[in-house]
Amino acid sequence: MRLYLTALNPTDAVLHGFLPAAASLGLPATVLTDRPAEWPADVPVTRCAVRDAAAVVAATAATRPVALLSNSDHLQEATAIAARKLGLPGKDPDAARLCKDKAAARRVIAASGLDRVRVVTVEPAAPPKVPNGMFPAVVKPREGVASEDAYLVVDHAELVARVAEIRNRRPDVALVVEEYLDGELRTFETLGDGTELASLGGWRTALGPPPTFTEESLAWSPPAEPVRTQLRARLDALGVGFGACHTEYVISDGRVRLIEVNYRLIGDRMDLILAELLGVPLFEYVIRLHLGEPLAALRLPDTVDRHARVEYVCADRSGRLVAAPGRLDTVHGGVRMGCHPLREVGRTAAHTGTNRDYLAVLHGIGPDENAVRQSLAALRGDLQWTIVE
Image (cartoon, rainbow, N blue to C red; front, side, top):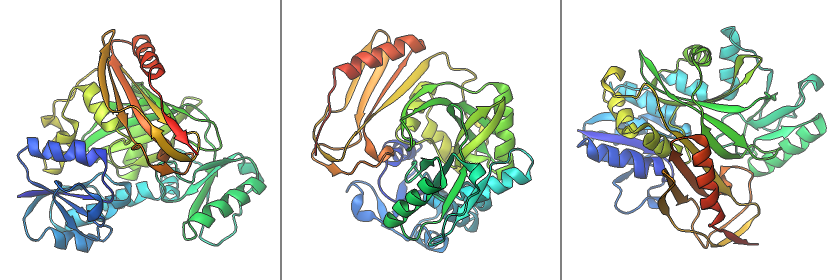
């Protein structure tokens, strides 16, 4: 009787979320990964070709699995197929595939009559052929994550240059070029049991300057009911409804327009902060859904009477981090705040314009937006990060 988690590299969600949650539920857990040497020595790991569903099934043969899940964008489809082969509750493999393939997701939403976003797929080595009327546009990997290699382009010449730049790093990647959806970026967080879907709330996201799309801060901002209804219709069209899901969207003329759907918990420690804000064992709830429990068995809050804000400290250049604050937890003016390092001192890294540039995450949870914002500003003013090129 064992919980299996498929993963690639170690993440806070697994190390500080799912593994402690499994222990709280009395479940022994094993991480299946193709990178066992990267994981801490005290984490039970088994080497496995986790992108291969048959290999995942074979890796669970020694101990009967009671649940199988993943929080990795890259592994949702293979894990869903493996769970189905094992007769375990899990996500629909087709839905997992659609969420990963941005072009396919656009086609399904358009066919459902819910929204039509102009999109062109650019296969590896093929020249980008995009109508001039599509600009400004966004070019990004068809199956990308973390805003990596995602750029705003204003004309065809800039598109050609960006495609060449991306291919220089990743020659085999398929790309999509889609019309730029203007508006404030927001998120929608959900849990489902395959029949019922619950809204956990959402965040208002501030981005850094173009042409990249680095998330710099998020403020708690649950969507109103009319927006939730539109979002649920789009998730229904994609077949999304089991376990955790993180959806990004903008609103244009009162209409929801999806940016992308990530069939997992929100990342970059936001899942841990969300659990603290809601006051629920969020990771335990995800596991319990994968154990086959109904959504109604989970004690989710009807409303949240607090505000939360998250700010990322981003590197502004390539180089070596030579000084940085350590982990910090404090209370100021009734606001609980934390600083969690995301890059260790001494590490050298290139500047990417993505969340790979994050040095630390700061968060505050308090009675209202002004109190949280002011307390975080005071905390950040006392902290310093130094990078040497």
